[in-house]
Image 1 (cartoon, rainbow, N blue to C red):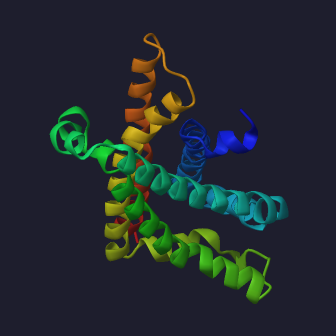
Image 2 (tube, rainbow, N blue to C red):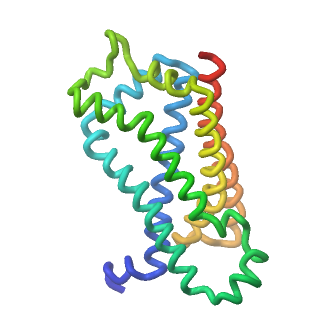
Length: 226
């Protein structure tokens, strides 16, 4: 099978979906670890955030890749769902799908849309101000009034209980999405074995609970300690 036909096939799309999912799973864990520093040590958070936020390789190389990965994963998910819906007989949908699958697996597009809306809010809160500061104002110092600005900006945003409530709802949907998506990514990549699959599923459930819970904890920590 040629590369072009592989990308167009159902299996090829699922593998590409899985690979983009792995990429985002790693990013989420890294992002959670960095943000957790805002609770543990504001100084360390500022140091790491300054490096991540001002490093040209990350800003001009990895950040566009991340943005593409998010949009590609969501777009491919919608495309596969529409393809699957067309392929299913109507009778099967009515009689068997609800009985043989979980709510999450049947509604990955719904959770995906909610996550997409969350990304819109997150971009509005953090990404767009960063673009304005660095690319419009030309300020690449990472300072505000002579002090590192990243921790103060995070606390300013997250100390709003309404914003943190919105983030909490978003992370609940992220958790639901990950509970199915983690194990599904391994299965699509061909890593399915009677011996290892139960362990992968357990790791997936743990990841789907722990990572969103860390983000929720960070948000409400700053609300309660502002």
